[in-house]
Length: 351
Image 1 (tube, rainbow, N blue to C red):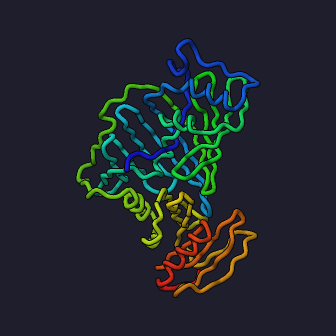
Image 2: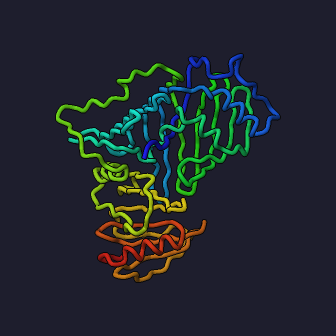
C-alpha cells in the first residue's frame, strides 16, 4: 500500500536554474491551444527531482467550514521519500515522514508515533505541486488556457485521487518556471494551494527523512493507514466516530476535522469498489437542518429514525443519530440505502 499524493507548489525569488529545456525554456505564446501550452509547461518542469517548499492550503468540504493548513514539504524522487510538517488551523501539528520503506506519523504531544506500511491517500494532496506535479500534468486533459506577459493560466481535468477527476487550474510563472497557485474542484470539495520559498532540485540530506522521536515517545504497533488517520481525528473531537458497516466494502480516502459554526465536525471521504465517492459527515449536534431548498422525508429503518432526500446533483442524503453522533451520508442512492440499512440495528435517536 505505498504512496498516495499531495498538493504542494511553488513560488520563487529568482533561483530556479535548469527547469527548462537544454537551450532555454520552451516558448509559450498567444494563439497556442491548451494542449500545446500543457506540453510546453511540462517541458519546463520535466526534470524536477527534488523540491523544498512551504504551502498554504485552503480546503472546503461539504457542510463544514473551510480548513487552512500550513505545510513544510520536502520531497524527492530517488530514493522516493518525502517529509510533511503540517500545522492545521484547528488541532495539533503533526509530522509525516516517508523514507520509501514505511511512513512515520507523529502528532505533537502524543506519547506514541505510528509506523505504517502505506501512506493514507489524504496526505497526497500536500505533495501535488512538488515532484508529483509533472506526472499530474502529463495525465491531465487541458481544456482551456490564458497566456499573459509573464504568466499562464492552464485549466485541466486532472486525476487527483483514485476514482476522482477534478476541474483544476494551474497558475504558472513564465519567469521562474514554477507554479504560483493551484486550485481543484470536485464533487467532494475543493482545494486552493499557494506555494512559497520554493527551491527546485536542492540536495536534501538523508537525515531529513529520518524521524527522531521526542524523549519518552514510543512506537506503536504498525497501524493501517485508516487507523492512523482516525486516531488523529479522534484526538480532536469529543464524540464517537462511527464507521460504516464492514459489509459496505468502502475504502477510506480521507479524514478531515473542522468546524461547522462552533461545533467540531469530522468529514470521512470514502469510495466504493467502482470508484464512486461517498461522504460521511459526523458531529455532536443533536438536530439536523437540511440544506436550503432540499426536501427530506422521515423514515424508520430498523431501529433508527432517518431523514432522507434526493441531492440536487443526483444521489441521496440521509441523516440520523447513532451512538450519540449525528451522521450525514451523501452518495449514490443504492450505496446510501445500503449503509443506512446496515446501521439499522443500532440504537435509534432522531436527528
